[in-house]
Image 1: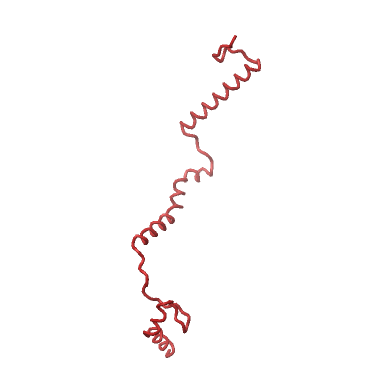
Image 2 (image 1 turned 90 degrees about the vertical axis):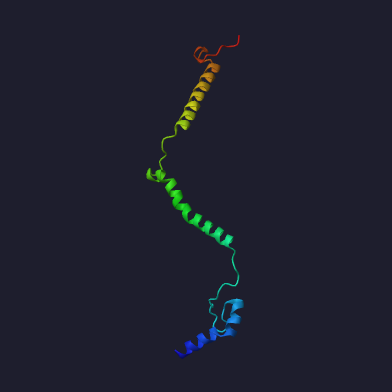
Length: 120
């Protein structure tokens, strides 16, 4: 008990504190000495770091909530939107027209169903 009191007195002596303020480590024991901060961090830097940490903490739950429907369906794709469905239909119609034109070029069909007049 007496040795711990002596150690505490030594750690709190002005000489020991003065030495440890340069390194925050007591040279005799090698323990870290808690002291008030020696460098003031600007408020804007604290604010920026706080915002960055909060955004990082919240980003994963937000991502999960945004993709909740995908997770509920077990990764299955949902029905395409009306705009996407229209694009798919237009693409199919274009492919069918191209097939008909190709068949006409090969002589398998006539021009009548395509609304195209042949060059004579």
